[in-house]
Length: 325
Image (cartoon, rainbow, N blue to C red; front, top):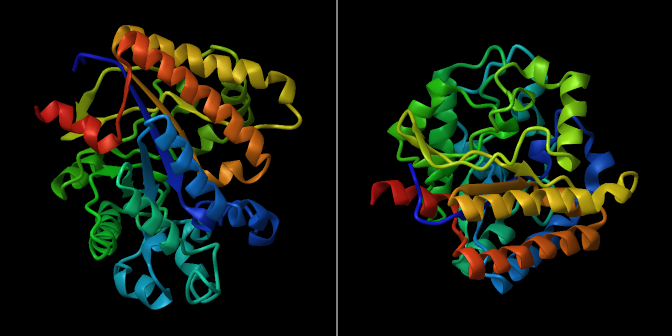
């Protein structure tokens, strides 16, 4: 679908420890997660300064006030991964009872801040950080998880219209399920082979990882801007770029990373296409000030594109509604 103007979309995978529990220990990542209580309000303040709209794709667990609510909203049928390490439900006996006791698995105070701001969207990152392409899980289990995500949001007066799939694992069968339950859109993946999430083993191979790292600084896959497409009843607001956090080791390449994103944004503005930037709030947990400095540089560039090319910024839900008009 051709657009009348270009658009910037920013989505955040809001997950805390639920997003990394299968690849990191809590002890090794605590400092990053603890910073999120500072990072989210700071993101809101900076975004509002430049009239930027954010979509917080939240894991449903984070919306629970306590462990009892997590258990109450959890679906009866849970993901039956062949690799049981992928299931977060095995952690429920170990977590604290609420955010005060356990700021690594709950985020109700941050959700309240986002809601009260009213400029931004809270979408779904599934209920339990569900992996849609891992072996063993089924469509029926995914649907149960989706309904749990919708229901726990509803009790907080949040209507879920957007979904971001954990690890960007997109299963076309599941898009139809999302459409059947009122979801309007999802964040698709870049079309280049290095970003293909259907084969999770291939995705994690060293070759693919190296190419994705290089693509952060050098234009290998293109700008990855796009027009809106409808897939199985959902608007695909595909990813353009993961905002890789500041690296001390690769700090000499930081200007190239920012310039790569700026060029993509400019291309989208000129061609009246979408540029979709994303990351996780906890990615800013280290080198926080340097990450925010880079982000503000991008927001200033957005402001220039807005005044020059009428470039606009919308949440995922608001942008998807263009297709309905």
